Length: 225
Image (cartoon, rainbow, N blue to C red; front, side, top):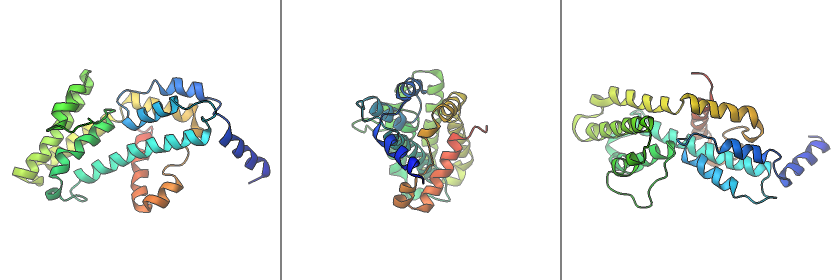
């Protein structure tokens, strides 16, 4: 690294991001059903005072949002895939934790107090559009299939239908409006994205898990349909 490059990096770490206002205008246009982490990062960024809006800080917030989104996808894949999960041990997660993951992926914050049957009693009433109602019903079918498979029929009896429903859910995450927003972000603000997972994440979380995160990240951000 040359002296000039080193000085330039130091300046970037100290000064506010030059396209901050443009970024905030664009970021505020993200689809409502983007992962909760993107909304939380947006609110955190919006609250940053002048002098604290540096490029490294924004990169950190972007990396955190991407990691939360990818990690939740990894968790779902592991829980819904019999190769990675023991169905005999996930009934509590199916009733409590897994619905929260689905909710976060659809941009819905989890409740302060967890009610019984949280998906039907809390999340489904939050759906305000026909499309959101449809995807929430898809998630409800997934959760019901997991319950029936665990308690009554066994996983093999529900596997095919469960896989189809889960693929429908994942296709929703790559609908045109999500792909268009991510594409514009990459084109207009490429300096904010960088390598993901970061080297720091790999050091903390380990290579195997981060390789899995990278697969999910590539799938979410790829423009291939």
